[in-house]
Length: 394
Image 1: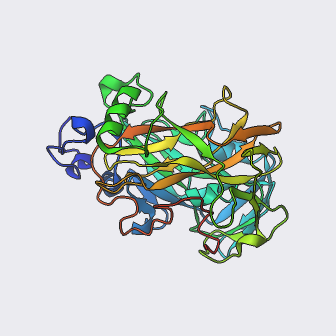
Image 2: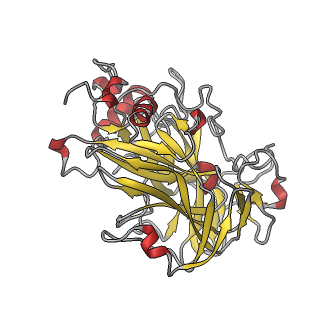
Image 3: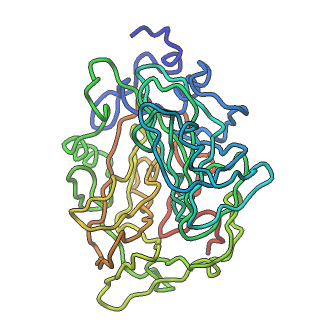
């Protein structure tokens, strides 16, 4: 591949050595400087100029546009239709977002985003809710024209982007420019055309990375990724093990930080000596992993989708971990994974130390300009059990 490609003008000619002695590749997840290169090449553009604050170490925050459509049900356009083609027969009414509006809990909305894409054939994109969105129990997914799945657009995609939004517990106030989800970009080369996840770190290499820098404190369990256990140990001095969302609470403005009293929206969860929690399928919980985890600068991580083999529940909505999350060179891993927990259909018992999820790691094509938690207003670095940024912290 010629380095006259503007994407590679942002990348060093000789990438530095990565963890466990393996050179960084030019396939995998793109860091912030490569995202800026895509913007400079008009492969990522906005109806309003993209702001520097949207660019994270390995992802781009997406902004809501001027209007939201209340729709009857979730949908996918399929390979032969655009989102607008499908929207006409599903819309109940249109909501102006320019001055702010409330999206009601239990309803489904579709919002055109301010950003759109015109990607080259070797670049695909994937999306997640932002951490703060998931911790509010807001279910949001990315949709693109002629796509057959949520939260992904294929290589070479050219077209608009939409967010499907369904607040589950709290009604939320949003406006044009509010950021509920983020998108990341993966590059593959022609030889990898059959590889679903070029740059995915396998278990053998994960063990080598853990041996080198430490992905968790103490013993590590690696099977199809880094396995995480749930912590139901009480947090001193309160004795709580987590939070349960209160139903019929007030509206949360997603753009207000530190605005709301915790006890107006959440109740603390306390357990007996058996350290077991029955997950009610009608309730939403914020819990934490037992492990403190680390994402070294050369990698990103995400929580894998729920596995029905270990239980019919989900433990994340967002689940994307930027490079540098919980990482400080020469120190032990410093941040727990906060779990957004909901049992899917039936009550389910979880016990302290039970495996509830796994982190999968991907390589970056290069070291990012800035790491998570280093001067970019990261709210969740060094976190323990922590609610979203909207609530006043102790």
